[in-house]
Length: 240
Image 1 (cartoon, rainbow, N blue to C red):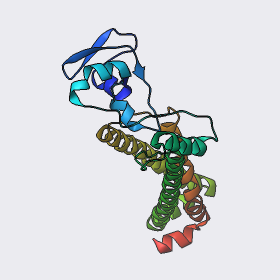
Image 2: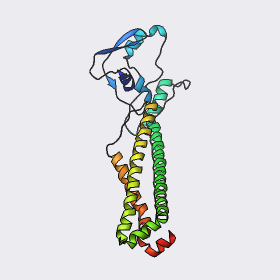
Image 3: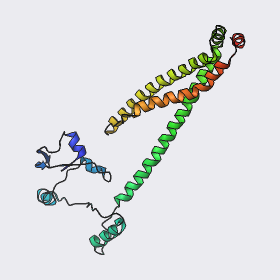
Image 4: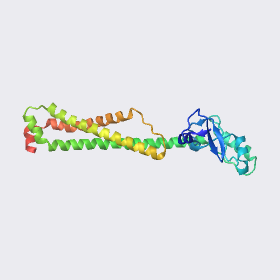
């Protein structure tokens, strides 16, 4: 049996009758071990029967240096203590035990902290982006005050003026969302390829990102649009 990492590297498929060579000896591959979160090294490992290993590698003086034991939940500590006592037989403490479940819990805690940091950075980016759109649209209202005054003098209502700036904010958010999604997918794809991971992307994430960007842009455009709609023709012509 081989790990899933080796299977992907050499294009092994479940059910195929293929062989793998170890130290000049060929072994039949009877299965592929799925990813084991507790032991990443299993992904690129080859598993053979103990008797076969003892027979084929006896001249190399290779002895097993690690034993994996599965026990019921809640009995990990007692099992580890019993193993040390049984194997060492009261002699020097030559055998060490490690509870993988504790390591997995620590890794899960680290993942949760990392997710919290990523979410916090994302929220900060959303706030900064919204403030940036609001600032740009406010400056646009000031710079186009003469245009607003002329249109108001020609009979355009406040609603039309406000809707125009709101639409512009929406377009800015849409374009920014599309660019952000494309850049994000590209960055994730590059990082995944460099790390040797599998690229997985939920189908709802890209449209959700674009919709969120448009929603933020609409909220950010409320004040500039309202300000533009409330400008009086004479005041805008004077400012322009």
